Length: 155
Length: 276
Ligand SMILES: Cc1cc2nc3c(=O)[nH]c(=O)nc-3n(C[C@H](O)[C@H](O)[C@H](O)COP(=O)(O)OP(=O)(O)OC[C@H]3O[C@@H](n4cnc5c(N)ncnc54)[C@H](O)[C@@H]3O)c2cc1C
Ligand code: FES
Image (cartoon, rainbow over all chains, first blue to last red; front, top):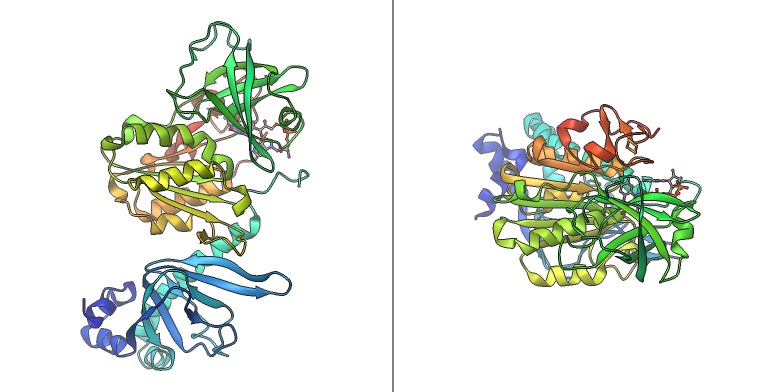
């Protein structure tokens, strides 16, 4: 599959025209990570939006006294990170490839400029991003609920 | 186990082995003292009676054939905690089996997705073993198991053996990882989008805390699994287990008799109803 075809097969390209997909593809490249390599580092500039094509990525946070804690794992067809979308464009977490990982990497600056310039593209990307985010928030709530914990009063 | 002639009269069983599965979960192997043909269906439960302490419903966690009778129990309260302290050799009362079963035969010919949360793996174990015993009758077979932390993973040896078979997609996730955990992290419902199955020809069995089952059911529906093909196993407080007392009522259903395994359309709007 060419890069262009790869971008066109993404959910946010459904309903977009040829030229718009071409502009999105111009922001993208395929990037591979070896096992143990970082996609994102906490506090570093959030300059890339990754979609995982193959492999597994851990989202990790350094906790004082506890070392690195994995908060969630991300698999194929899932997005890694959204700090690239909103100021101050700094990564909040580490993202570590735990298997050899292939991604579609969008350069954040030209992508944001394209979304600003062409609101149809902006809306298409945002729709996917918001649905991913809402799913993650929901999962996070369940994780926080600690549903498998001993019943109240027995902890 | 054929149902006893007097449905509320327990038969004596001896605890012949005990295994500690995690800090608060243990598995009993029990054997009847008298003549008692042990037949049951995957998903059914027994009422276990610790003499002088009390009686609780517990699912059968053994294979329907070829294994001794197993019950996997979490010590949570006034009956199950003292049960955890009973030594091997103790005689307990047992009546059952009761309730509906996982519809394994209905699932044949298509893909089978099993979603287990926490102790929910125990009632699903007989269904998994049943499906593996007739592996050729199913398309893809996925087991998606989520639990609290690596220390809470149940049946670890069994999971390793299932993974090694290569004909079952096993995904294990924990809500809270430790630094040495290399598997997935996050709620089990996230695995539904990742697993390889054909939604239109899939049957799903789900067991775990009710809130987890609600979200798992919704994720399966989003993926395109037909509502009627999604089956959940419910737990409600029980007393008689034979449809007399009404303790286990959930909407129009008596869970002991109409459940515990019920299809999603019969549970619409009921998963948020608080226990009586
Ligand atoms: C059909 C069915 C199958 C079951 N299968 C199993 C099984 O295989 N293994 C197993 O360990 N348990 C199983 N249970 C749950 C088990 O019956 C209860 O945990 C047990 O009755 C608790 O009794 P207790 O007197 O020890 O606790 P209690 O003193 O009654 O309760 C202690 C605490 O646990 C909470 N609690 C009680 N029951 C439940 C429940 N079902 N879910 C969540 N919280 C609860 C109470 O609200 C209380 O906070 C099953 C229940 C049903 C209805
Ligand atoms: S427990 Fe008595 S009716 Fe179900």
